[in-house]
Length: 121
Image (cartoon, rainbow, N blue to C red; front, side, top):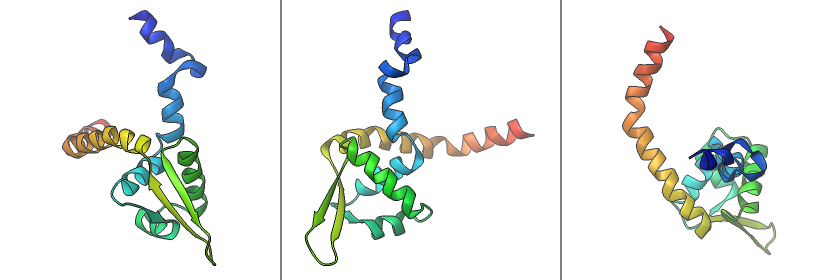
């Protein structure tokens, strides 16, 4: 047990920290959820679908997800250039776990909100 817990205390070696650091933020999760529902999506449509993300943050997050192989970016040689994003098989394998978190959140949100209200009063 001690050996298993030890990995969490060393950032350089901790796979959980490495993964959550790159894709555990709300924007990454939302982008993966959206792209998991479609075959592909263009930048502007993705931006409109998420709504409250800035274009800069969307660009940065898409690059991070692409660097980790969770999404694929395809540029079509057209004028103006058309760029589409799609979730990869690796992204789909992570999405299975994200969807479990979504289900858990939906099942528990009411109780969580009640707990927060009790805590704050």
